[in-house]
Length: 350
Ligand code: UT7
Image (cartoon, rainbow, N blue to C red; front, side):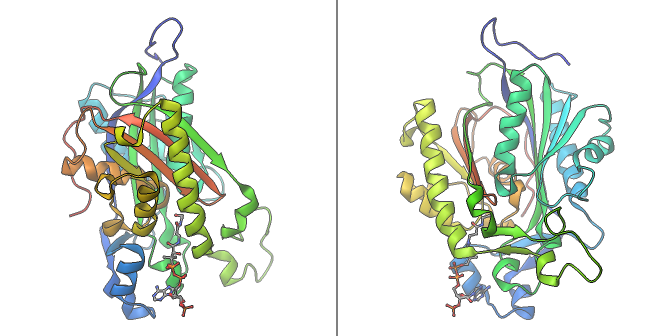
C-alpha cells in the first residue's frame, strides 16, 4: 500500500479514477410484466418513470454482476494510471450467501486475493456509505486505492407476483476505483452526510433469513422469504430525508443549490427524484436519471447512473455533482464530487 499524501497536515482524499456499470442482458419491459401481473405500462410509467429493467438469469448471482462491473472499472482506472487496489468493498442487500460476505469472492475472481474485502449493508444507501468507508480507509492510510462496487439482484428476493415491488426493481452493478489524492482535485469525494433511523426498520424488510427469524422445518413462509416495502410511507420518508441530507451536505461544503451542476439521486422512482429536486429548488433537468432504463437497482443505482451519464457525456470534467441516497434501515446519505477526466465510458444500456 502506498497512499499518496496530500500534505503534512491534510489527510488524503478519495479521488475517483475509474468507473463502470454492468447490467445482465435479459430485459423485462412493462409489457412483459403486464402479461403476468394485474398492471399496465401506463400505470408503471406514470407512477415510477420506469420503462424496463434488466434481470439475472437463473443461476446468476450478485457477485457475477459485481465482477463484471469491477473488471471494467479496474480497466478504466488502469487506463488512467491506477493499476491495483488494496481493498474491495461491495455494497449490497442481496449477497450471494448470508455467510461469508460477497466481497472476498469478488476480489479473488478479479485477481485481487490478498486485498482487504468486506460488504456494506445499508440497502439503497449502500453506495454512499461505501464511498464514505473508502474515503475513511484512504484518509487513515489503511488503503491507497479502493474498488467500491454497488451490486444488487432484487429479482432474487422480490416475489415475482408482488405487483407493487416487481415493477420497481431491476438488477445491476456499478463500480468505482478511488485513489488517494488531494481534497481539492477533480474527482475528490467529500463533505459526507450519513444518517439512519432504525425506528422505521419495518418499512423495508426481508423478514426471514437472519438471526431474528431462524429457519425451522416448514418455515419461513413464502411472504417472509420475500422483500416487503410499505411503498407510500417509504416514498414520503425518501423525499424528506434525501432533501434534508442534500441540504446538510451543501451547507457543510458552503455550496449553494445553484452551485450544483448535476444532482445524482438514488434512482428509486422518477417522481421521488423530481420531488427532491423541486424541494431543493434545483431545475429538474439537472437531475441525472437512469431509472427509466434499469429500474431501481438498489446499491447499484448511483454508480450505474454515473456511468450512464459519463457515457452520454452529460457530465463533463469540472462539473459539480451532488450524490444523495435513501434506503431501508432507514438510511440516507449524501456527498459531493467534482467530475474528473475519465477514460471513455461504454454505454451499459442502449
Ligand atoms: O429504494 C428504496 C426506496 N424505495 C422507494 O423509494 C419506493 C417508494 N415508493 C414508491 O415508489 C411508490 O409508493 C410505489 C411505486 C411503490 C407505489 O406507487 P404509489 O403511487 O404510492 O401507489 P399506491 O401504493 O398508493 O397504490 C395506488 C393504487 C392502489 O390501488 P387502490 O388501493 O387505490 O385501489 C394499488 O393497489 O395502485 C395500485 N397498484 C397498482 N396498480 C397497477 C399498486 N401497484 C400497482 C401496479 N399496477 N403495479
